[in-house]
Length: 174
Image 1 (cartoon, rainbow, N blue to C red):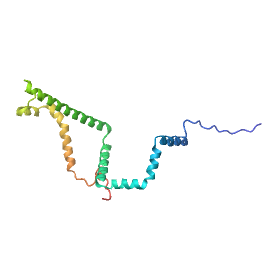
Image 2: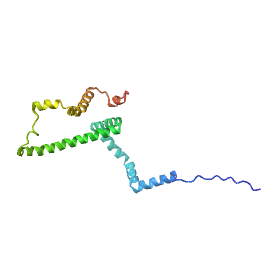
Image 3: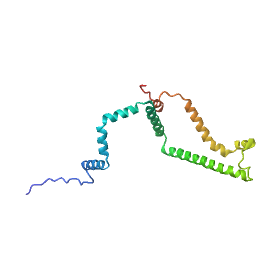
């Protein structure tokens, strides 16, 4: 009787292996000029690093980096849906301000010619009194006033270091 042959079936190749992917990545980097750029960066390492360090060692640059980190820390605490809501509310508000300014200029020109002055005139004392009783106006102003209150309270809080305030953990160093 014949001796049994042991044969393990190799797994099928589903996609390129790691070496093929690496070769493709290197070729793509070469085609787009990134390898040449990286080589030039490494070759000019001493001069480039001196320029970068000199540029970053200025108070204005350090302030910019710290301010950008504060912006990133702040944005990291906002959920995307809330940030979207706030940004588009801001956009709508800016558009409305711009639209009213253009409308007011056009109305002001027409007002000199038209007989309908009551609509565009200042409200006066009684008009202001009626505005104080306008529920829709107070409903619109309530979030603005709450935002101003929170803004004012936050400005009054003393802060040692932004990172310490953000994380609640003490930091070392200057």
